[in-house]
Amino acid sequence: MSLTASIGSGPALRVSPLPPDGLYEGPRELRRLAPGQPDRPYTLFDVAPLGAVIGAEISGVDLTRPLTPAVREELDRALLEWKVLFFRGQHPSSAEQRAFALNWGELETNPLLAAGDDPQVARFDRSSTPSFENVWHTDVTFRERPALGAVLHLREVPPYGGDTMWADMAAAYDNLAPEVKARLEGARAVHDFVPGFARFTPRERLVPFQDRFPPVEHPVVRTHPATGRRMLFVNTSFTTRIVGWDRGESDRMLRLLFQQAHVPEFQVRFTWSAGDVAFWDNRATQHYAVNDYAPHRRVAERVAVAGDRPY
Image (cartoon, rainbow, N blue to C red):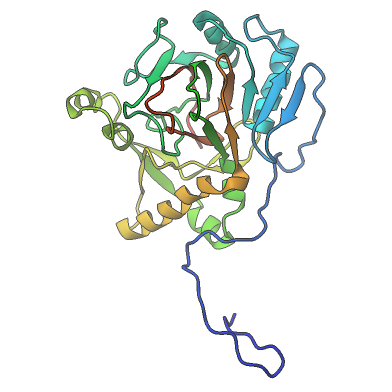
């Protein structure tokens, strides 16, 4: 199609092409549910959406008490439909946080992270220290079986800042150009823990973990095992290259795919208060912890649920 246009007999519009792999203005396809999935009401708690495709506040559920099977089932549906759930003012203990997460499977730990009072609970105690922040990522994609999800509890919040953002990677995939989707069909990418941790971890601490966490391959576009939706599964922290592609071609494509997390329509941003809890589907999202609160302190504790092999 020509990039010039004429209006009546007036002058032609000048040629002004955009870069071929930029992000463009215009409408987005914002589809929260899988095709054919009905939008059913919730009956056991209240759901307040925070965005069109991702993020909802849940009220009427006490995370410090055991869940009934019916509430657990409806919360699971809410997680699949909204990708990240927020619970205000819960203040769970470490044991209660673990008990809630166990409703979704066995827990996993990451030896590269500091533990809290409970060895199965990772603690992020930050002020001005460089940390796991200021980058879009999906947790532990350097594992053969990345985490299913995570439960994060903010114990101490700064007087300002310290928000967390999540992006819906199904929406990110839906909005790729058809020719990009076709190019990615069957593509696999390498994920490695080194790039994400080397930014703020001494080399001598990382070297002993190289044999334990060798590079792994995952599909660039994974299928959600519960919803069947296709989702981008690459991230800035851990994805290093697309298998079998020329390095320049791989780098260019990954830059394009990484940018998809930056589209505001695919995101939700949450401002914390002490005692708040977030539970997210790590298979379907990326997240970004905003470090704009130094020199104030922010203390968060996270429990991770073990996942399955992406396909």
